[in-house]
Length: 353
Image (cartoon, rainbow, N blue to C red; front, side):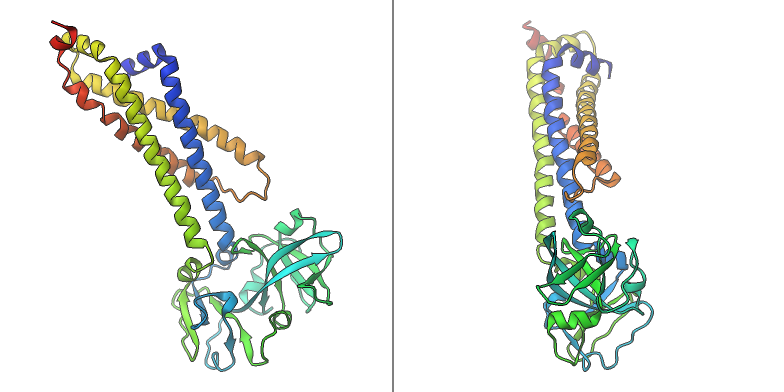
């Protein structure tokens, strides 16, 4: 460690450039990871808030809530308890005077079931009548307020916002909770249609009858439009960044090792063991990575604090730990590449004797 610190102090510019590269890559890894987690969360916020484990959909709906319809015949023998709830989904455009239009998802729910009762209100109350609705809290950032009357899909009927709900998004779109009567009107379904799906908090719940089929909630989430592709894209980008960091650390340390081969030969001739020189190289790598990652973490904290709430970023402890450990592993592996040259150095030949 002493040799590593002395060399870094002596060659400030060279090692400063390595720290700069590590900092930039680490910052980008933290940024992409936070965006990936934030976007994934906005896809599943509502589902997570329901603590859902199973979902019953029409077996011909391609595991899509928006395409599912369950009729009275499908649900003839359904077993609905305190852990189950009917839901109906339809895409809507929210409009109100002096407010921006917002694309949202309307969810019809029943007042005697857990989704209605478990709404995490941040303001107002739960809707009671056919024209009372609760909406995702993100609509407040767009200027909507309690008591605002809105139209859905250009309908003549006005709906009153009586509450704002926390964590009410699905597939990134804000949710509007309302009555099943409103859902049926917006979706224009036949009189025999009961709901779009049944959601259950019971991991052992299963209902298969006629066209109804039960799926694990994880299967349903993975089928959300763009969800899996989005996560895979971010995962590949982050993985490539780790590989790039490994290459940069290995190349820089290898070049520096080749440049100081004469000095290493002198040290070996003086009796300094190879393991000391190897330890110094590995220590250098760890120090450079730690300094670069710490700077990246500080800048990420600042970035997360100043970015507007509209940016779906979630800079969590898990991201910090995973990113830091990943960079340390890449740094240690990268430092092993020039070790072979250190172990094979010939003191007599390098000195020129």
